[in-house]
Picture 1 (cartoon, helix red, strand yellow):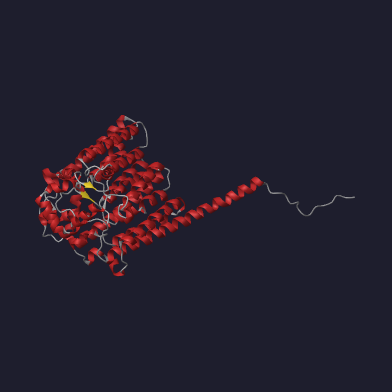
Picture 2 (cartoon, rainbow, N blue to C red):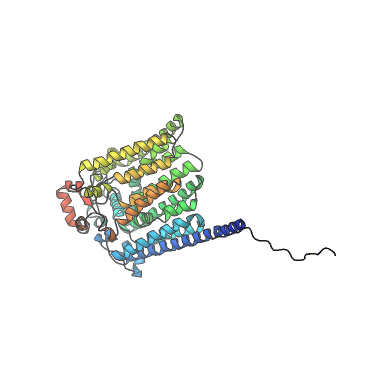
Length: 497
């Protein structure tokens, strides 16, 4: 009997391990798709809520546009006013919570998102904010007032206050008419370019400048993250779609976005092809906008492994500071450092929701006494010394500078919500999870103080009613401040609405 020819393959039992591997492979292919879906959904959520907030704030005067106290001209409301969307405290709260949830979805899927659609969403978000009115703050009119004082009225903004030019059309929109300029000479002189444009043209130029600076910073942050081996899309999403960055900083046209641009420039210069001396010059340019940019500078100096390199970076920083001082002297003479005195005045103020103020309330202290503020200041100095020491010992200077900034925000009695963005570039490019978590918590707190749900958690509403009087009746406020300037030295300024 001959051999039997088998024409049909004998079926084999599939190995269980192989089945598990295949199943795992399928899940691995599904996970990026799910992440992309979540990220795309989050981007749409951020854009939709941002549009409703911006258009709603433009539709009618409300507490979300504090500059309304000066009137409601079309150039203030912006082109979105005709949509008549409407915005109240409840709807604002719901929209902000949805935006925050959408932002978390974006972060969850950011690594799998393509850079092009993410960049498009970020640019569109900035365009929406430029088209709307300045949100939450009147600071942009302070910039205009200081610029017009110097360029049109011959008044040095470091030695004079906006109330001395009370007939200027910008004055009615100013929130702090009895304060000197706390901004650096580079920004102050550059802002003079807005004076010939009038209030409307000046406002729109500053809104566009804030958005452009933010977008420029984002491009540099993505570049720095990629150079350090981290995800550029995650870094860009972490900063560019952050609700504090969008609603409070870009939406308010704050010059903090210029500070962010200088910091992002320094991060990019030290990440891609290390140029620490050029990075120190970028940070000094930030100091020319706001002194707070200087907190990162010593960390950059100590990041070099050798003493000779540290001295070279320090020398470059000192030369840049000398150039900045020369610019200030040319522009303002002997009063070029006047913004330092204004910052000293500012630090005598107490923001109701600063950590020192809130903890003082928890301990039933009378107000926020000076000794309590000094205690927090001492804590900051200890944290600063510790982080500088770690940097000198070889730790990542970006992470250490980030933690020093966390300590600064936690210890200052004058904490404004948009200051939270100072942390974003450092947390975005470092890849340190703990620093990113701390940054998100600070951003969440900055959002929380604007929501009604915080009423039972934070300082009592009686202080808020005083602040509303302070903001809504400028004439009365001006007379109070003129009669006794000291009244501002321990005022609790509440930024909830």
